[in-house]
Structures are given as structure tokens and as C-alpha cells.
Picture 1 (cartoon, rainbow, N blue to C red):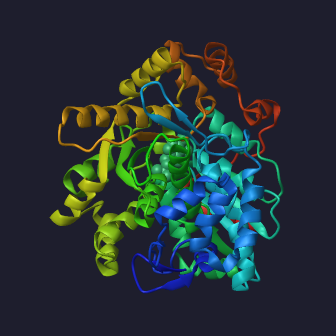
Picture 2: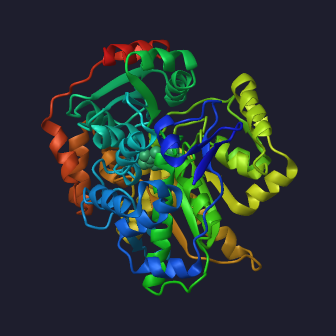
Amino acid sequence: MNFISTRGTEKVTGAQAVVQGIAGDGGLFVPEYFPAVTGEEIVAMCEMDYPERAAFILEKYFGEYGSGELLAACREAYSQFEEGDPAPLLRMDNGMYMLELFHGPTCAFKDLALTVMPYLLQKGCELTGVKEKVLVLAATSGDTGKAALEGFKEKAGVKICVFYPEEGVSKMQKLQMVTTEGDNVNVVAVKGNFDDCQTAVKKIMNSAEKREELKNKGYLLSSANSVNVGRLIPQIVYYFSAYCDLLGSDQIKEGEKVNFAVPTGNFGNILAAYYAKRMGLPVGTLICASNKNCVLTDFFKNGSYNIRRPFFRTMSPSMDILVSSNLERLVFELSGRDAPLTASRMQSLSETGKYSVRAEELKEMKSLFFAGCTNESDTVECIYDFFTDYGYPMDTHTGVAMNVAERFEAMVEEDKDAEKHPTVVVSTASPYKFPQDVLYALTGNDVKDSYKGVKRIHLLTAMKVPEVLKEIRYKPPRFKTVVSCDKIYDEVLKFIS
Ligand SMILES: *Cc1c(COP(=O)(O)O)cnc(C)c1O
């Protein structure tokens, strides 16, 4: 499979797309076409375990890696998860299903992709004959950073540098990142919000001059953000896997549609669900849930994407994003894969802070997606009610998705003509990653100390505390640098010298 740029004519292999991270014209790589998965193949996947399902999907995009090797890499990646099944699906007492994606090494859904991506990158370098070391850069709203650090630490031929907004992550997320071990990792706090971080990193990625300078120092730049197809493609797997689990346990019939509700920030997770649908997975509505930063909700309502608005820090920090990178890939598809139009819209976004889509594109968007947003008190109430009614504690991001999913279901319930399908809510993080806010939602109590929060949530819910979060409590912080956005390239240079 080849990958093409959303903004031009560039065409590369899967391996090249992973190694490069983003296209030379500033666009994002997308598959040349969506490989089909037939109904029979979905039935066959029901018999497979998760690594086999993953290798089956990955092979459709990364055939040049070889199916045996892909399977071995997936087995290795998903052996790092706590409970054997990296993506268990649970039936909730409100009739919905919960897809728990937080049993990996860093307790967030990012692990599903970032445990296998280092293999895709290292092997990709081999396949494309790269001689240099790879320097992976990542901007993080909290969870990508730690997952990428864990994925790439101690990997030969790779260095990784993570930038996070100084005030924009939970205490636990920060603690996880700054205690990472390994000689090839670096973590830097940036003054500003996630958008500032992401824009600054993208600027380095898009600078031919800086790429050249780094190349002369023996490094090739790549990205661990979901702009990289090495992140995006592995995320498609769990949508197929959830569907197979429903089918395999007779909760649905063959070909029956399923809705997915996804808490959304950079639009990577939900875009993978859209890709799954394009590949043939019977998907009903994609429920795009946002917090108070409701730029996507507005876009799906009126077709105009406008980032000229206040930025809010919320209790779901991994969704505190205004510039959703992966939306470019959806807009590219909706435009009928019109690269010049996509390029001009993205130029408009960076120059004026906005762009609009045509009426027929908006109509298509509305037929695929239901978008909604929550304020902080909606989220708190949803987490409290859900635990009180059904005994299940959700993290603050999953709470946003559940709240919007419940609203969607209520709307469908009222509409006699609407098609009704089972809904899967994607649970993206362990409640223990956001212990203070989750405890507040559950009890109304504020605690200053993260571990006091962890302990109280455990006493209250009896949910198991992930070992990896227990361990970091006594690890010394290793990284203390704080810089302004315009200084991050200097940090990169310092790190590799
Ligand atoms: C990253 C993240 C999100 C948002 O995912 P996107 O792919 O950026 O839309 C939601 N919840 C949690 C816990 C996350 O870490």
C-alpha cells in the first residue's frame, strides 16, 4: 500500500510514511485507498486473539513488512498489557458497551498504538535504507508523551524528545513522564498550551532547513503524534476487535451496525473509527465528544472550523485542543480527495484561524457523525451518576464521551424513524491517571496529593490500581527543564549533542 499527501502529489510506501512522519509539503499521509475487509473476514477475525486481529489489519497497510513479522511484533507489543486482552469490551448496565483501552504500560489508549509503532519505525528504517539515527519528536497533551517514552526508551538507533504544556497536564501524567528511565529520552515542559506545543513541533518537522541541519548531525526527524500513520493505523484494530467481540458473543447479528462514542482531542482516535467504517466495518453513527473546548462540535454543526476563541483548561486535559490535526484527513476525504482545496483550507487555518466546508460536505459530515460537548459540571455529574447507578468508575475523558453518548441515545429514542444500534463508548484512560478530578467527581472532595486520591478511589470503588502507577511514586524526577515555545529547537539540539 502506498500513502499520499493530503496537500499534494507526494506518494510513498507505508514504511517511508512512518519514517518521515509528515509529508514534505506539510500535509498528512493517507492511504492511497481504503483496503476492504469483507463480512467473511470479519467473521474469521472473531476466532483470532488481539495480536492476530492487529496483524491482519496492519498487513493491509504495511504488506512490505511481511505477515509473520507483523504478527510477532504485535504479540510482543500486546504482551505488555496487564490482563492478556489489551482491549476488553464490557457490557454496562445502561445497555451500552465500554471498550477499555487503558490496560497498557501507561494506562491510556495511546498504548495500543505506541507499543507497536517503534517496531514499525525501526523496521521501516531498515526497509527504506535509512542510515541515520531517528530523532522522534512528540508534542503531548499528557498521554502521548508517556506512551511514546515507554515505547521508544532503550530502542537502538532512536532518540525521543517529548514536549508538554507546563500547566496543561495532570500531576500524575507529569509524574509519569518525568520519572521515565533510559538514556535516549528527554522530557521538556513548555510555557503555553498544547496547541502552542504542537505548532512549535510541527514547525520544526516542516522546516527543510532544520531537517537538513539535523541530517548533517546524523539524525532523521520523525513524529510520534497521531499525524504519523504508524499511530493511526494500529488504532483501527480495536474498532474491528470490539465488533468481533460483540458478534462472537451473539450480542449482534452479522452485518448489524454499531455506534462508537469517542472522547476527542486531536481527532486521531475517532478518525481511526472512520477509517474502519471505510474499510467495511458496519458502523452506524460516530459520536464525537468534546469538552468545553467545543471547536469540533461547532464545526459539525455549521461547517465552519474556527480556532479564534478562548482556550479552556479542563479536567480532561488530553482533550484541551483547538487545532485538531487529524481533521485534515477527514476534510480531505469529504472534499473528494481534493489536495489543492485541502492545502488552501489549511493555509487559511494557519493565516486566519478558520476555514469552511461546502454545503454538501457538511451534509455528508452530519450523516456520519453526531457531535456534542460537555461543560465541567456535566462531566462530573455523569461520572458520579454512572458510579452511583452502575458501580463503574470512569475517568474524566470517558465521562465526556458517556455524557454525549447518553444524549445521543435519548435523541434517537425520541425519533421514531431513527435507526437504533448498540453503542460502544471508548474508554481512553484509567481513572487513576486523573485521581484528584475523579475523586472530586465521585465524592465532592478535593485532595492535593495524587496518591491520596488514588487510595481513596480504590477504597471507594475497589477497582484495581495499575502496578505501573504504584511504582512511579518513589521514582526521582529526572527532567526539570521549562522553556518558551521559541526555544524548543534549541532543546532538541542540546539533546542530541
Ligand atoms: C489523547 C487522548 C484523547 C484524545 O484522543 P485524540 O486521538 O487526540 O482525539 C482522549 N482521552 C485520553 C485519555 C487521551 O489520552
